[in-house]
Length: 214
Ligand SMILES: Nc1nc2c(ncn2[C@@H]2O[C@H](COP(=O)(O)OP(=O)(O)OP(=O)(O)O)[C@@H](O)[C@H]2O)c(=O)[nH]1
Ligand SMILES: [Mg+2]
Ligand SMILES: [Zn+2]
Ligand SMILES: [Zn+2]
Image 1: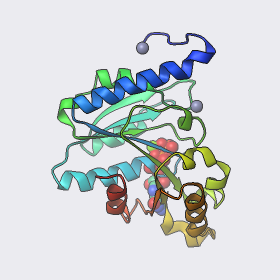
Image 2 (image 1 turned 135 degrees about the horizontal axis):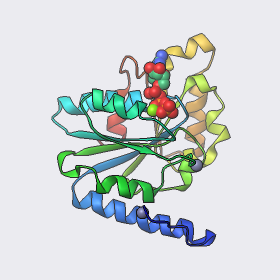
Image 3 (image 1 turned 90 degrees about the horizontal axis):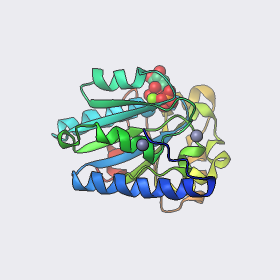
């Protein structure tokens, strides 16, 4: 992998160029890609698996790139579910970027997938600053992180048009009202779509796919 640290001021500009290149490549290959961001443990992987099940039933070929600081746990879950998958460890970085994703796309069998979910590193801060070149973005939070998650991270919610509030099956046990998260998001992003999900049962998965235009 080449070094793209060309001076602090240029890093974001270079990342934007690389994101455009990823976008062009995905368009050319007819792959609809989605950047799945969200809090640690909020249910990104399980929601991707649920959406993939639904898409497979419709004959849509699904792939996934698992972005994690270390290890291949999520990658192995994607493989076990029969998805074409790649693992992308970031080491010291707490987010994916267009450069890393570009290299992952070089080695990915893009001709064999119609939809590609790129699971970002669990984190609601810096993934917001690094576009990957996907056609759409999704942020996953869950009720178990508390009802103030949206207010504490306005940037990522203001710029992301589809949000899943996951683990709604647990809301009553921990005394969190998902409606507060929904209301905070609507204030920050009146045009966005927010879907309540329970990835364990699959509740909300179809609605989430529709929100993503799938
Ligand atoms: N009860 C309940 N459990 C869930 C739900 N979604 C995910 N989980 C569980 O929560 C844990 C974390 O889910 P993951 O899908 O691994 O979460 P993640 O966001 O991919 O986690 P990282 O990639 O480590 O940030 C797992 O044990 C899931 O089975 C849900 O809607 N309800
Ligand atoms: Mg995961
Ligand atoms: Zn490189
Ligand atoms: Zn980061």
